[in-house]
Amino acid sequence: MRSLTCLLALAALLPGLSVPALAAGDCSAGPGTARVLEVDPAGLEVGLKHFPQTLDLAEGEFVLTFDDGPSAGTTPMVLKALAAGCVRATFFLVGTRAAESPALVKRILAEGHGIGYHSQTHPMTLADLPYDKAVRDIERGIASVDRAAYGNVTASPRFPFFRFPGFGSSPQLLAYVASRKMGVFGADLWASDWNAMTPDAELDLVLTRMEHAGRGIVLFHDTRLQTARMVPALLKAMKERGYRVVHVVPRGPATAGTSP
Image (cartoon, rainbow, N blue to C red):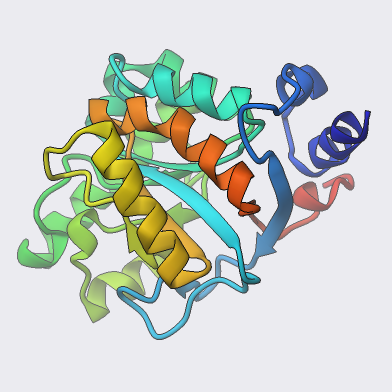
């Protein structure tokens, strides 16, 4: 009953999220979502691997993020594990992949997860492209994700978070993203899942890095099969170690559960 009460309270904070989506499981497979952290996207640049500051997290608190999806072969596995553990994450989506799998984008949103942009084509990196070409790739990615999520494109991005592919930014591109009212996510630690390894090896690596960091934004890739297979064990281990998951949402009337 206590778990259900916590889930109901969380549902009130997340716009467009139904109570059944949160209360479907008993959270025995994971740590649940301990709290919702509201942030102002304006000027937001977080992640100690790339910026001087990160999110205001307490010891043992982690934000789970996934890049490069959605992928029809692996993202559903990640979503299933997150649902079983009552955990909310943030998915930074590539425009071309979102256009290929709009139903998955809608599912990510419907299940209460956050969405951010990760460019249209995931160049390595945007900073290595001519400025105008990089901006076009950013804007096309915004349009593709918004169209997949909502069926249309508006003048302003529907989601206020962005992560640079390969973390390749420049002062000019950071200023451009800020001008579009989007905050930028880096990471505090990552799974290094771009390298081939077994799910068990990845789990050991991530837990070691979590223990060393103590808190932070964690980067995974939901396009990687080894990661998709590893997530259930990770959530179980986080629960056993007393780690807490924090879900990040943009600050505003809607996130506070009030009328716009």
